[in-house]
Length: 284
Image 1 (cartoon, rainbow, N blue to C red):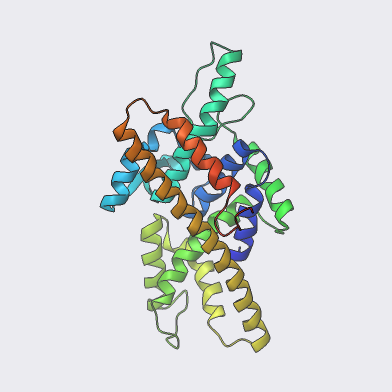
Image 2 (tube, rainbow, N blue to C red; image 1 turned 120 degrees about the vertical axis):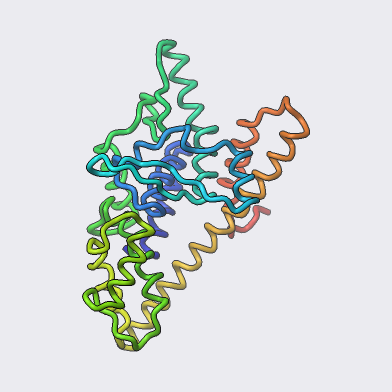
């Protein structure tokens, strides 16, 4: 899946109901940035996501954060979550997710929140794998991305990791999935992901083919596609910068006044970002 296609998918997730938009955008971002499978993404619990003051401390100190995920076969692995992803998860948890749980508890006082991050807006229970598949199928269709699947979103993370390692090798040096240099590329990428190096061979094969000389028209198409993807990433980066700046302001105000309604402030921040996304012109 290309960066341009991922950009279209992210645009679609931002449409419609704000609660579902936030949740579905995160359902897309988690596998894209961590390569988690459906059942692994759905394992994430509230305790896995630090509070905002802790996230801000980690940003300031450049401290990484890992979430322990149970992989296939019961193997546990610590998966790196970026500060940006943690911040977005916390906005969802303290904002729209909390609203969903509060409304359900008003209807059913016996309801118990099991503490999973990704829940149904209707029941408050953790989503199941089939629900995630249905959500993604709808997103893929609206974005016009053909032959898409959750696995292809996960593959974006793998492809980017292999590409990063391949880009360290000078153009002109022969790299294949079977020679020593190629195996070093696969091993370096696999070590970061906690997977078998051989599982990444198809990605390296595809990337090495792209290093061959291509026709001018095809190169121009790629340049234009990359430009569109870069524009989307720029908008997302500006939006993330707005988020971090807003979080710093909330943290500062909370230290000055213990009686502040932090969830309401965070919800206001999210609403402001939704109303005025980065890169969009201000209303006159």
